[in-house]
Image (spheres, rainbow, N blue to C red):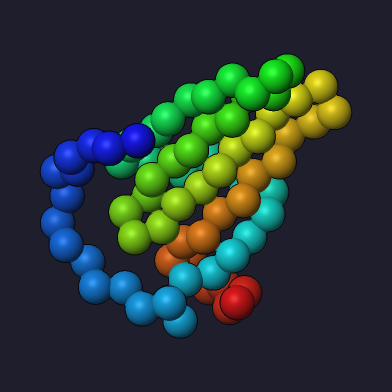
Length: 74
């Protein structure tokens, strides 16, 4: 996916980011929806971070790497 984003620059260090599973969809600057077999995959660009949402017959899973106030997860 190649896209131009209209957003202000934000300096982010890796130490500012947290990794979580199971988080609800966050507001995204860009989204790419994909079908993989019987699964739906959504790639979400959140600025200096990202989120991946996977939905299939067995359930839903999300993975998020983002600046999340109050979170100290590595």
